[in-house]
Length: 141
Image (cartoon, rainbow, N blue to C red; front, side, top):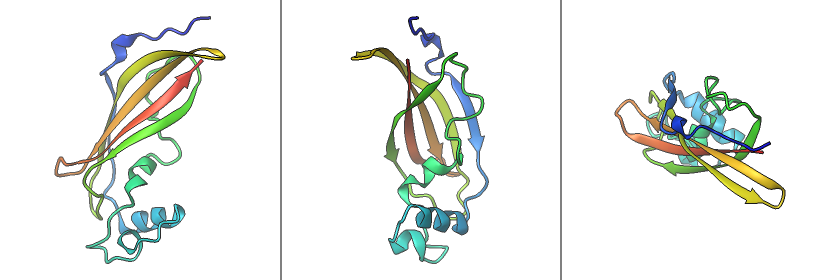
């Protein structure tokens, strides 16, 4: 059965989430969980503390994919992430994630046809500064 996806969904925003203000506890807990030892991420005063760069990936907890992602009719799996980091996350930042379908493309491998869906989440802080751009790739067979 061939895989088909409507490319008209490219560019459509399907999620816009404003998160609660970032706390020092969140930043320190994340740093500890990933084994970060740099004092900048772990023991700095609240005013000096910044989030470990990959903190933004954990914003949605166990569910990186927003619940209202377009229904694509098939189960896909994580094919990796590309992350461009911007301004550091600081205590008190109010982060906003805007997610769009960025690209859909097909590849043929040894086991047949695969379709890749790229979901782009642009994360900004309350000052409108880019904190990160995350391209989440999903692969469908």
